[in-house]
Image (cartoon, rainbow, N blue to C red):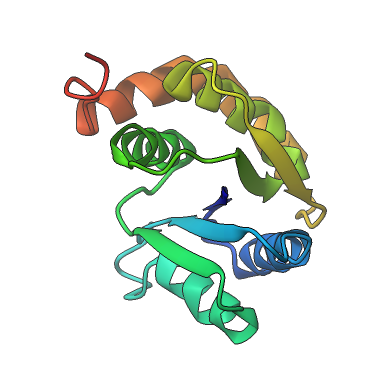
Length: 167
């Protein structure tokens, strides 16, 4: 039995660290199950950063890593729509039949992330694990960004087409 734990990156260290802590705490409930971590996040600001969000996540998670944890790295995605395109590509290509797939993100990000996931991944049931940390303006920006879900998905699909996967 395998569980897939999709950890969405974030370029704000405080928020990313809380997502990681939330994911590690959640994953500890799976003692006798193989946990595959899909670490999704590239470099959002190349002028400021040289390490991908996925690599940052792996570095922190590896401190707690039991033998039944495996890692899949998406070092390309730089936004939520791209995260889910990479997840879909992985799920469609892997021979592993996951018992459950969980997505870890911030509570304030859930509504937009779930809308994007539904548009890209479709009807596959996802479990959601939500971290509590947020900035003073996180919910304000989510209200702005949620208006752009369709445009964000369309732009991401132009960048990373799913043509071969959607056949």
